[in-house]
Length: 41
Image 1 (cartoon, rainbow, N blue to C red):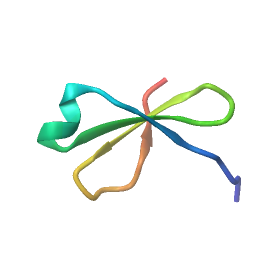
Image 2 (cartoon, helix red, strand yellow; image 1 turned 135 degrees about the vertical axis):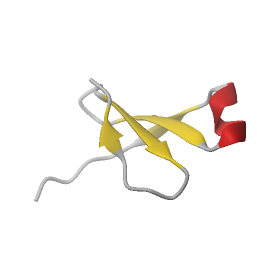
Image 3 (spheres, rainbow, N blue to C red; image 1 turned 120 degrees about the horizontal axis):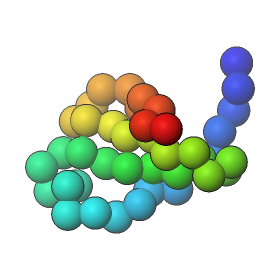
């Protein structure tokens, strides 16, 4: 199982429960409410 380091990217979408993250390779991930992260691109 791969191990990633995530950093959160702040956007106004955070106020409605959508968070964006970047991993250590620069790939984008998103998380809606308390669901698991999914890769955006």
